[in-house]
Length: 120
Image 1 (cartoon, rainbow, N blue to C red):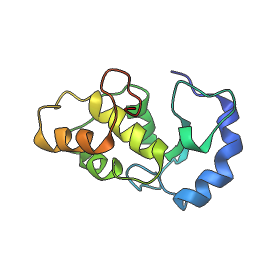
Image 2 (cartoon, rainbow, N blue to C red; image 1 turned 30 degrees about the vertical axis):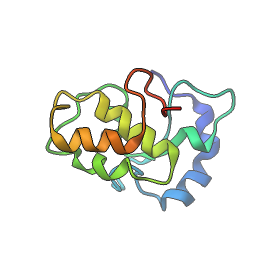
Image 3 (cartoon, rainbow, N blue to C red; image 1 turned 90 degrees about the vertical axis):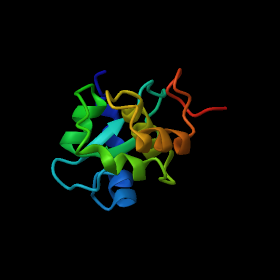
C-alpha cells in the first residue's frame, strides 16, 4: 500500500516521540514517517510511526527475515499503539509463525489475526 505524503506533517511529533530512531528496531538509518493502513481521514499519531528502511520494506510486504526479526517481540509491548500494531501485523505475516516467541508476542499484542486491528 502506498504511503500518503500527508503523514509528513507528523514528522516533528514522531521524531520527538521516537528520539529520531525507528520505533520498531531502534535503528537510525533512513528513518521516516510511516502510516498504518487503513489511513484515517487526517494523519494521526496513533496510526503512524517512525520506521527505518528495512522495517518500512517489511511493512510494505517484503519478506521478514526470521534472524533479524526478534526485536518485534519487544516492539509488541510498546506503549505506542501504532508501534504495537505494526509489530503485530509484521508477525502475523511471517513464514515462521510456528516459532514459540512469535506466538507469545502475538498474544501480548492483543491484535485480532483476522482483522489485523486491536481486538475489541
